[in-house]
Length: 488
Length: 102
Image (cartoon, rainbow over all chains, first blue to last red; front, side, top):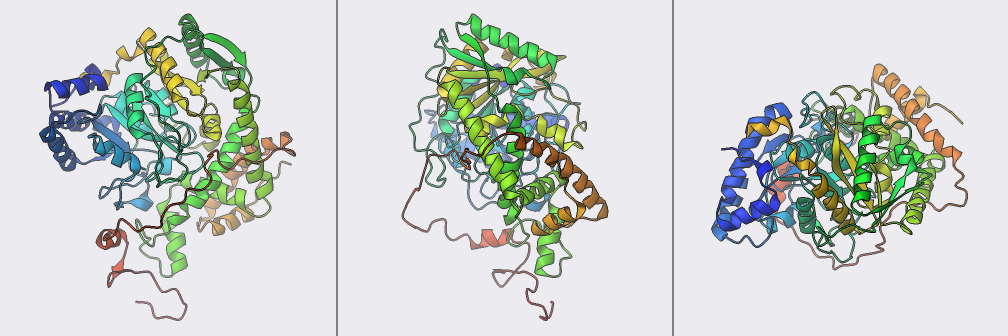
């Protein structure tokens, strides 16, 4: 029996479980049935783990302890997050059949709090891409229009939540991979401050940029999930030893006097008119709610894509050296010598986008190119951080579009990597500076959602959520559902 | 300094990265990488002579802890992930030339 998650946000699910309106087993079965019903179209889940999920749900029901707000609630996990004994492939052929021997810290935390993962979601191979089309396994479609991409790289998680298959999901964001699919699917996606959430068990792409974060349909749900994920982890030495506030604490507080900065560069060339108009209207809404809004400049924004693609691909080319066909995953069947095992396994096991980034990174780090590319990019990163610091001396929040365009057609950009890279121009700076960034639906252009991005000071996710919540409650855009919602 | 990457350079980088391409693939990658590198060239417009590079934004320095072993007793699970195993070990092809194969 399917379950309509559009009628219940996380708080309502929590209350319903406590009051005995439904059981965790019913929610998990409902989610699995939703997936069974819509996954042929959506292709958002790579696989499900019904036996384990129902067993966990039964244990939660028998225990009857629903103290934690996520106890008994099903979710989806991006397939680059390690799950012990369950396939985790990062949507790559090179990890076909791989089963981690440990759980990611976020998986441990969610399970400890009673949340139940029902399966793994599709993604761009090793989180490299903006459309989920570089997955070795399948092509996910947008929840609002099956001819459009869901965004990426966490496109499976974004589409799954937007289509109501699960009430929430986790993704990872290195240059926009949570915020961009959240924008394309009209939901809420948060990339927390670098260090806010442990990366232990997240298959590394670019270690200085990667962060795990939640996808939800509503802001309060998102803050609730981040509460469950955040905190220092001894297993990730880059996770921050800072206090974790209650991210829901500021929700409902007004935003009178909140100082909002709008970078003029975020509305420059390459931004579609419909996107610019919708986000401008969203900013007017923040003004109407009492925020003060000024235009500012982040002058190095236009260099972000180049700096990011050098740094990210350099880190990725190092991180992906571990995939060599020796200890786990795919090994080229006809390799006769050790060298052949390495070369054939990697050449047959990685897809084109992954190879492209390994090549770019290897080149950027090679003798002769290091100073002109890798070091130069790291210096540009410093300048971009200084741009942000300057603005945040006088402002609480930076607001602009999440993406230059709405979701584009499947197959239209996959063969033009440079065009795909430029689509990350508005999300990349946030990763380079390690700041929290959230995308929320600000309206629609031709039936496709437009994302508005709210960027906060480091470790000030609470203010980001406060403003996003005020905006959401004023616009109530979450009441509009995609056609696929009628399936449940 | 719009220097394009040559086909030979691409082949060299591929060998460093332990990747192999056929002729067609090499041509395609040379073109695509050249296109992307031209985007990277825009960084040269910016004067960074006095700018320190940022390689990470973490403020942590070192987290020291006891070196304690945990997560033991998973030999079977670990070996199950190996493409080939023999005698409870991961099996790889011969490393030294002259050894009999098989």
